[in-house]
Length: 557
Image 1: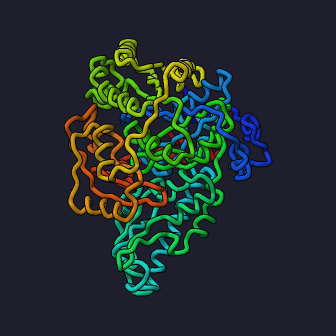
Image 2: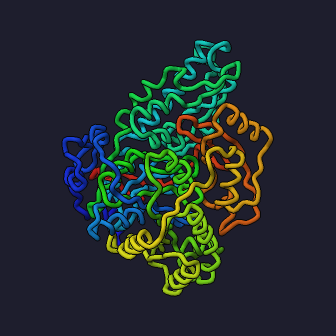
Image 3: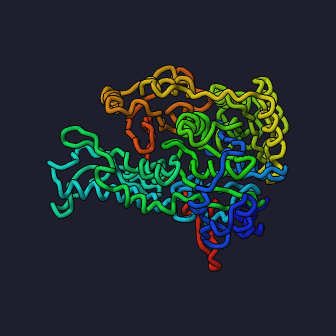
């Protein structure tokens, strides 16, 4: 079979005006970036009517280094719905350069279920990531400028500044830095650090804002630290909001591209789900719901991260509704890895390991049932899957009284997603949607953490040092106890230990830090060894990427 890049280059994609026409967007409201991608003007966004489409949210079992194909499934499902005559839009996150050059690679799907133009989407796209980075770092510069001119008696206490800098790259040496050294002309010397742009609160704000006015209000509410008399200081106190919003004036507009089969795709915003809330922008999803019969959106990683945050953070904004149905992506390879098989042996038949690893998928099935939304398990098919392994997982799902469908979109595109699409139709028609949040907002922050840990992760307890507990209680005392929690932890396990595969039981979730994201509207709870600035692996994907004499990018997976 051809590789992803060869497949993409063989397909003649359509001019972006034709894609816009499919969902009723006037070409005069497109701001084109070349022939095949465009931003949609805010005038068109504001014109959007009431919701008419049904929302399908795609999540997965606990991911593994083998890759589960969640984005590929989302794209293939959207193409399948289009083939069945449904006006469909797929709404996805933008790739971050960190994973593109790191371990994960690009985020444009695979095989015959891709969005295009893939190289441009993966590298720079329309500049949104850079605009978010600039807006975030502008605030950081204004913080240090205020410290420089005001000194110890000013608005901010340099010992209590929480706002770091960001960049859209994996770079572990920047996790902790010292700035302002070398004399008084270089500012106040203090310890700080860098996060990756996908973990920036500005990113979360862009994705959770309803419109430009809401964006500016949220930017103003960014907590940056404490004054010398322990009062909270926000971005609005530094008069940073107008300039930050000016840098984001184009980034707030959704990006329109297409799948290889010509299904419209809105790709906008890119928060990580292991650190942030892991969903594309509310503006893009809500617009898609006003234009299409069906909207397929994706949440980051598994149900314990992206899906839980989608339900408890994104849906709580009231800007978009709970999904009408969910898809839970599973693979034979992941089941075998969670069943104890080594990565280099996952292509070998092992029905026993499939059965053992099913306990991981079983927990994610339980999680979706907690939220009360109809769902279908999508078994994402790989060439190495055997008939015996497939029958085993299908039978195990049936024993759980769970809807399950084979998905072969990687090899067949939309055609390979028809069975999944039809099973989703049945789920929406035959099952009642009893959506419910995991906890009420008036629940204390410590109790919210415990609810997520015990009910979604399967922990028996939560532990933290006294200083972390006091930090959380201080956030609550300052009037932010009503916010949902956004738990940052490893994506590779239901627990906070990335080596605890399968379904860990009787473990204690270790909380290592907490911070307030008052502009985004949640409290970040860090667990285990999670890092908000990733590092490159021993052999990064960047080593395989090149530009040939024909100006074609090669090696981008």
